Image (cartoon, rainbow, N blue to C red; front, side, top):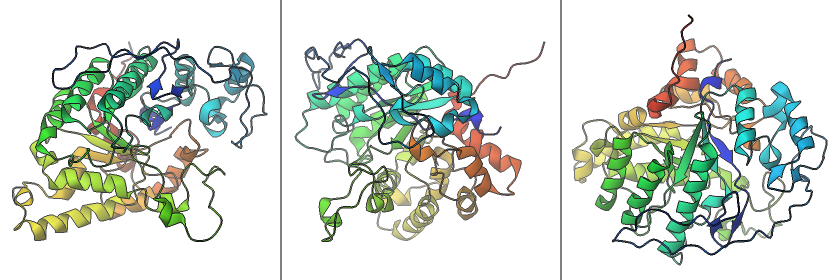
Length: 416
């Protein structure tokens, strides 16, 4: 079936985050291990962390699915054998019923390999969940040692998770609050074999992402053929509390709690990535580094056609006042089409988005094992693509991904 050739937008649930530290599988601290740059010393080795998370039997109590509630976790930070057996028995219904932390491969790399076999994905971007909270925190009180030390721990763990299966394309995290520390951590992420670098879609400390201090960062990504990615969680999920203070009872999030995305949050979730990319473009980052590639993942795509239109008229009408715009050799819409791509949610009409812009912009996303990927993402995208051509489908399911991630191409096997 079309689409499984480049299954993407996956996220891994790292098990434990305690006191700003991502813990390695053996509960040893992930201390930095590279030479210390003179411009910004790395943190001293992190203290030993002991897990206080219960390792006894636990059940999923919030996710509605067809699996009968049974013990899902055994000791040793893994699913119980009984739970794994039930997940394997799902067969083609794995993506429909195996979700969140109880999903096959949610936090165990050996299980993830089995899940890929069952799903048919030949390449899969792997994002972390909870372990990005510290490195991406917008708090100005976060010290560089803690921020970049936690990024180092994350990137080591991600490298370990993806190391034994070439189909897993690990995504590193690099905060941009300190340019010199960001460049140093980028080198470490590349050295770990990570295939993309996730940056937070917010101001870079007191600077814009197009500040000259970050030119070496974008240049290194382009040179290494490593794309940058924006992803949900790269900035606070929820609105300022004042916007939700309407004198009525609090609104629940879409999982039934209160800490995840709510209706007002999803309505403006696009503002962060849209602003970040707009600032990059207006400051000439894509023009200076035409081989730089990037993707916006799990942030929707309904906002993309209007973004292209708006940036084109901004460049046309403000170029007399802004030298950055006056020096453009390509229209903003051309820059973003050639250098970026976007994953629509399953409930967005990707066919309509293509008609409003172009077919080169959009990427398939299963979001396995998260619920927002839906029970049958390929079927839902197929419905919205309607009677559009096979060439358009090929771009959506594979070719656009390979434009952003050219090194992810799977060699063709020839029959003897």
